[in-house]
Image (cartoon, rainbow, N blue to C red; front, top):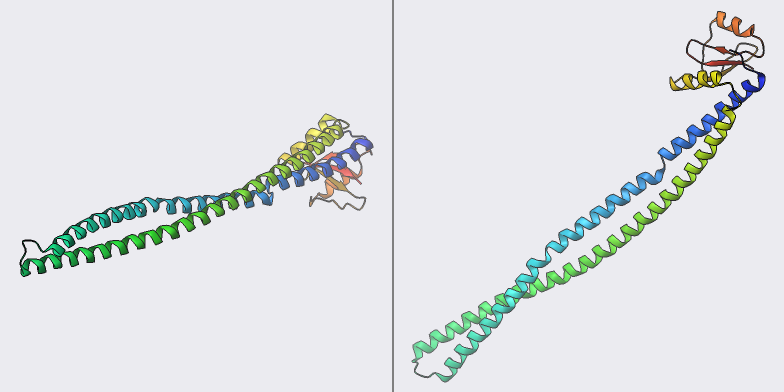
Length: 240
């Protein structure tokens, strides 16, 4: 295939440009910030779920406190009424007074149990409020971490995409100086996983891990300087 020395050099330069483009594309695809952002999103989700679970415990505690408070008031009213009856002793014999005292003692014991239950619920609610405040702090921190990573990802992606666009522009300009047939042969070889372009030195050494038969070597060696050889695998061989 005909190719001037300038085209051959441009083709070799194109290989380097494509390698650079490949490195940048790989870097864009494998930015560490992607994994860091995924971990941050997961941490935020865990913090939000934990806060939701803790918040779900609040209504039951508040109900317990309210119910206990109402029950204590009722018990206080009953105790006060019965205590008044006991103090007056009106129309009551000693046996009735003993029964009434027993009722009062029972109501006071019930009140004590209810107040204990109420106090425990209040203490638990206080602890829950502290936990919810800590949950909110963790969520704020997780949000800040996530937002910072989003900004970082945006900046890094923008930077790499800018570099890729610049390299692609250089590639287009370079490819325009090479005959379309030669570029097509090179691109086809690369698309099939081939070497694309390899350089054969005067001693027959070939880069890119390509093996040439003796017949191919002799054929390439005999080519004019303004021709290149295209192997059966589609690789373009340039004499170095």
